[in-house]
Image 1 (spheres, rainbow, N blue to C red):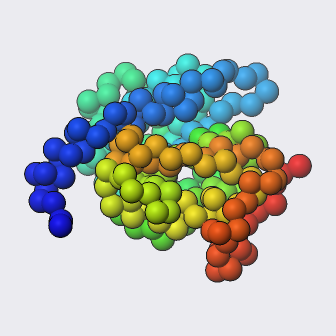
Image 2: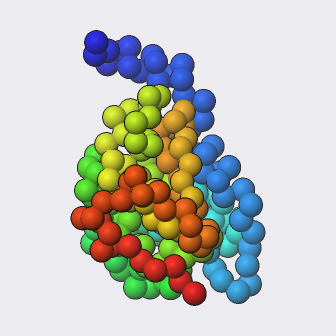
Length: 215
């Protein structure tokens, strides 16, 4: 039986125990300022998480890029965020056009929140645009995502439908589900262990996209 929109919203409010901002603060709580490397954060699509990322970026001295298709949304967020968002580098336009420019500018990206469009293919391509810069210690958060076969989700989880299996099949990403955060999210940590690949998720169509773990 399919629930109506009002019932879906009520169920989400009951089951959701953590919003995106709270999850991001927890995932990045251990980051500290570094004199060797200025951290780089990237977010596709701006919203409630942007302020949390801006606060963390200020704390650790990171540069934060926010890719957003809708200029009006950027202006509304800037107005609401005030000084908190003063140092955020907003990049209006399609994320698939702006992300490669960010990757060209930086050798390393420390955190990426992807999922700006309700499309599994678009989210996967966002990740691919940054993948070569996501080395050991890097973290990724996928919006509206769940592990394959998950029963508890707070949304359709369409955005992560391709990216999550790809991460699970990769030898270097440690994947964690957060079914009660946001509209269900999945995070991944690049730990360079080299032995985490799960063959159940191997997809020959994606195997060519794998990157060797940086030395």
